[in-house]
Image (cartoon, rainbow over all chains, first blue to last red; front, side, top):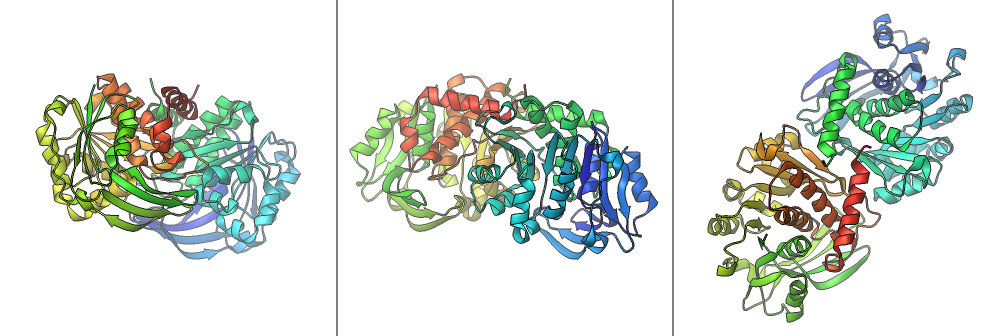
Length: 307
Length: 307
C-alpha cells in the first residue's frame, strides 16, 4: 500500500575519513523514499531548485518512486556540507543553505490523497501538522524531527505529534525533547504527549520501540532490534531516514498492524539504516536487491535469537 | 561446576541521586561472586583488612560462596568513595585508598585447585597472569580489566590475555585498549592478541560477543544480548562484575561450551547486570531468587525475539 513522505530534498557535500562527494542527492525525503521503495509504493513531496537535474529525479523514478509531488521552484536546492570524524558521531557542519526549502509550503497532489501511510520527515513541525491535517485518512502516521526544532519549536512539535502513531527519533533527541537523561522516563513523557509508539534509535546499538499501554497488542516491555556491527561507517548521512524508510515501508507492505509486523519492521529499519552508511550518499540504497535485504534480516535474527 | 574468582574486595561509599551508602561491601570479586552464586559453586580469592567484619563475610557465605580464599591482612580494606550524576555514566571519584589491596599477592588454597572455571577480575594484570599460571587446568578462563591498567600496564595486560578464553570489557575499554574507535575493528585487534572470544558491554544497550573465527561453533557474525531499559539506575557500581558473574556462572552451570550456552550466558549476564543497578551496593544481588532471574530472562527473550 502506498506511503507518502514529505521532507527535505538536498544536495549534500560530505567528507569522511573514507572519501568525499560533492552535491550528491540527499535529504530526509530522498533517503526515506529510496529505502521504503524496496518494500512498497512510495510517493514523495518536497521542493527543489533549478540546480536539481533531470538525472537526480530519474534516480528516484528508477526505484519506482512517484515524484509528481516534487515542486520545482526558482532558486537553488537546499544544500549543506559537512565532515565526519573518525568517530562517525562527530560531524562538523561547514555550510547550510536552506535556499528554496526556506519557503517550502507542501502541497499534496490530488493523486496522493488516497495514501494509506504517511511519513512526516524532518521539516518545520508546523508544516508536518499541516500535511497531516490534509491526510487525516492515513492508517498510520510516522514522524521524525531534528534537534533544531526541539530547540526552537518545541511547542509546535508537541502539537504535531499529538495525533500521530509513531515518532521516530534518536537517543539525543529523545533526551533533549523530554528533558530527561533516562530513556525509559523520556519515552514515557513523550508517549504521554500523544504518539501510540516511540522508536528511539541508538545508532550502532540498534533501536528500541516503546508503546503506550496496550497499543498494538504489546505489553509493558519495549522491543529492541539490533544493528549490524560495521567495520566501516563510511557516511552516516541519511541512516535515520533509511531506518524510517525500512520501518514504515515494511509496515505498509503488510497492510496490518500487529505486534509481529512492528517487531519485524524494527529489524528492517535496522537493516536499511546499516546499508545506508556502508557507502557514500545514496549509493548503497540504489544498488540493493530484496535478496540482500532478506539475507541481512536473517543475520540480524541469528545475531539476537536463542535456539 | 566450581568457578574461582580473584579480584578486589572493597568497602564502598557511594552517592547517587537516589541515596547513598557508607562503607558498603563491594569490589569486583564480591559482585562477581554474588552474581555467579545463583548459578554454580563459587570460590573467592581476595584480601581484606581488620575493618572487614564477620558480618561482611557471613553475607557471602549465606549465598553459598566459599570464602576460604579471603586473606585477612593487617591494615584497612580497600576503600573508595564516589558520586554518580543524573547520567549514571558520570562518576566523580572522591577517595581511593588501596590499603591492604596494594600489596595483594593472591594465593590459591589447595582446596581450590580443582576449580574448572576461572575469572580474573579487575586487578593488576601481572597478578591475573600469576593466578592463571597456577590454575592451568581450568576449562574456561575469563578476564576483566580497568582503564587504569590499559593506561599503565598495556604490555602486561596483553601478556595476561594471551591464553585466556573470554575477555569481558566495556565499550570505552575496548576502544582504549585497541586504540580504535570502531568496535568491530577494536574487537578484531583484541582477539588477535589471544582470547577466543571478546564480550563488549554497552551499558544500557546490552552487550556483544565477538569470536575468533570458528571458535565455539560460531560463524563470522557476533551475537548481541539486550539490557532491560530501566527507569532508575540507582547505583551502577558492580554492574560489569555482576554481568561477568551471570555470564561465567551460567556457563559453569552447564558444563559444556556450545554456541547456545554462550548465547544464553550473554542473556544471563545482561539480566544480572541489570539487577545489580536497581538497588545500592550488593542489596539486590543478595535478595534475588532463581525464579526472578528466569522471569527476567524471559522478558529479555520477548524483548528481542521475532515470532
